[in-house]
Image (cartoon, rainbow, N blue to C red):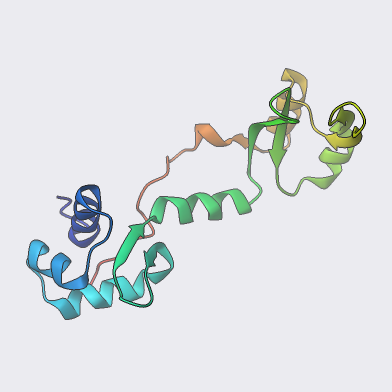
Length: 155
């Protein structure tokens, strides 16, 4: 188990073994009081998924929350597949003037229900323009996604 986040490590170990866990189970396995575990869970509540009716914890995801915050910052871009996997496009937030300059119209749909949509195609030139504008490829995160948002200090 992790020395810096023993409660998080215990929850992850329990959820690998079964679908949900409780505060009592976490406290007994981590060797901590139920009050301490409950305080940590409440302070990190936005990263803990639980069943509100019975209080069982079903998931913890500090990396997903960090990913959402980093993506919302507008400093990153990623590639995706549009139109049933046929068109490679780039996704990014903000940088509207760059988006207006790089966007292209593409046909989508099928015979009888086709439509036109605008996107930024995944080309080396468009990637270079994004990098020049200060964006970083999302898979090249530095530092990588980790558990830095999870706090277990007693303060």
